[in-house]
Image (cartoon, rainbow, N blue to C red; front, side, top):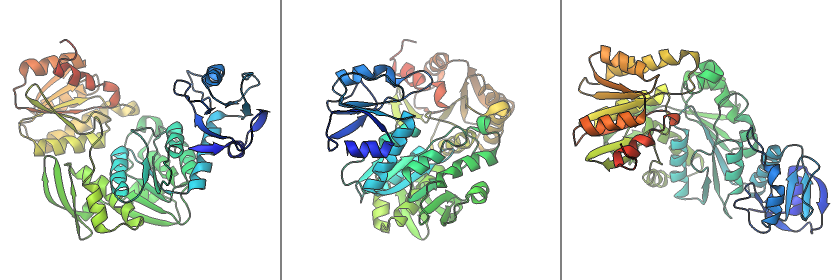
Amino acid sequence: MKFLLEELIRAAGAEVKVNSADLSLETMISTDTRTIKKGDFYLPLKGESFDGEAFLDKAINAGACGCFITGENYPEKAQVVLKVNDTKEAYLKIANYARKKYNPKTIAITGSSGKTTTKEMVYAVCASKFKTQKTLSNHNNEIGCCQTILGMPEGCEVLIVEMGMRGFKEIEPLSLTAEPDIAIITNAGSAHIGRLGSLDNIAIAKCEITAGLKNDGILIANACERLRKFAKFEGEKLFYSINDVKILEMKAGYTKFEYKKEIYELNVEGEYNVENSLAAIEAGRCLGMSYEEIKAGLLTYKPIEKRWEVEEIRNFKVINDSYNANPESMKASVSTFVKLYENPFVILGDMGELGENEVEIHKSVGEYLAKTVSRNVKFLTVGKLSVYIAQILENSGFAVKSFVNNKDAALYIVENVNAGTTIFLKASRAMKFEEIISDLKGEIKL
């Protein structure tokens, strides 16, 4: 996305320190000197362990026409130098300027779990009719928000921005930048409870997504009690629930269901995926899409990497759902898996950011599974916390093995698990369960 120099100055609220270029000069924002192109304008971001202003000279030498600064030093060769107090704030201001200038219908999405899946489903629906831009992968912080907005293609009609957080006042600036027409909250569960302290606080933090929601916009939210209580948006609110759904058919890789007297299909299984799809259906309706258009769009949805990713490895069917995990998603995904697959073998890892009650929360997952899962399911756990899940299961009569690291877990599978077994992996990303996949493939020597 290109900006006139005068637009860049105005949008960022910058002080002009050097300018030997015409104000009608067109330029694109770049934050990475490794990919900078001739004529780009360098915006140096800063973090705890890096300072982009250390690379001002490199940016100019690589062809940048100018740069932002926060101090007094700048490259002599720069055609244009603009000073701001904070480059991240400038980035957000520029992104907001672009959002207003091109004015696509904007959909913001957050939630304790399911937000990336929901984002992909909303994209599948919208992209079937509109020219649509979405957040890449899970790039859902301030930088990702700006990259998503500034990456809009020419003629973009729908913009989908995923918004993540780990504490209070992290979603609010994203919402104020994107100024959504539609805001979606998938749920408010126990993810990040270690930082926020209570489920109420998590719901309050998620509801920050309404900070920038337009007055005539629509809030689409899971119909849980806390979101109803803390969603203070005074405009139109639409709550959805799996209780409003009738599952007509569910098998591995396919679900057919009825919602509000219409029939929809998904090329994935699981009630939690159905619930995520309801937000996409409602968003499509808000955009004026027909039932046929929404249904066709949903059928194009495919899970992204490490989200219910199915592979055949060493005569095993391996389902990798280890992109992230919290108690709610672990219970839901394991329950779905064991119902739909023969010879189920479940590998569970630690869940992160659960605070001082992390042991009890892991035990609660074990207690839930012990009550709801058949005794023929075999379990393996990896990590210091998931062993508490194992202890509950073992005490309830399940066959369980526990390991400290991924390599030992992979070795046990190769030496002890029968061919034809379907293996399911679920853990927080920090557990690096992709290492188990690599070991099973023989990419790392056992």
